[in-house]
Length: 311
Image (tube, helix red, strand yellow):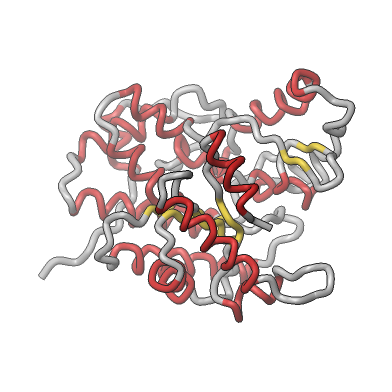
C-alpha cells in the first residue's frame, strides 16, 4: 500500500517504517496472504523499494523489516535474503504469539536451533551496519558503561503500544490477541488517547512487567529478559492456571541466546565486571518470590556464558 502520498506523510513527520515480511517468497507467502489467499511477497517488496528510494534521497529513515519467527524455517536463509537480496539492514525478529496452553514443546526446541543459527549468521556477517534488534538491544545493555545507560538499554522498549485495527478499534497490543487480553478497548472515533491510557489494563501490564515467576528468580538474565517480556510477547508467559506467572515458553532458546551474545562481547573485549554490574543493576525493581538480592561477587557465579573455543 506504500505510495508517494505515504512517503510525503512519513517525510513530514519523520516516521520510521517497519515492514512485515517473513522471508523469501516461498516462506512469506505461506501465511502472509491477501483476502483472496494470494501471497503478498511481490507487493510488499515493491513497497519496500519505494521506501528505500525515499531513504536514499534522505526523505525518511531507512526502512526495517519485521519478521515473525517460524522455527521450522531456515534462519540463515531468511537472514541472507534480507541482507543480500533486499538490502535491509534493520531487522526485528519477533517471537511467535502463543501461551503455555497453546505451545508445542517441539516448536520450543526448534526455536533454540533457529536462534542459534540466526546468531551464527549474524556474527559471521562482514557487514557491520546490520542491526538485529533482539541481539543489538541486549548487547547495548550489557555493554553500557554507566548505570543510566544500562537502565535505558533495558527500558528502551517500555513504551505504550496502541494497536489500531483497520476498522478503528484500539487495543493494547496485537500480540495479546492470542489470549484475548486487552483487546477492543474503544475506537478511534469515540475514544481519546487520554481515556485509552487511563484504562486499568495498562497498570496491570506494568505490574506484569515488573514481576516475574519464581522459576525466573535465580536466572542471571532475569533483569533484562523479565520472563520473556523484554521481547514484547507477554502472551508467551501466560497460562490459564497461573496467569502471567510463568517463564516464557521459549525460555531455553532465550537463555542460550543471551549466553552466546555475552560470550561474543567478552571475546571482543567487554570487561567482565561491566557485564556483571549491568546484569546485576537490571535486577533492581523486580518483584519475585524468594528472589535473593545477591551481591555482585556471588552473582558472577550465576552467569552462564557460551564462548567460542580457542585453539
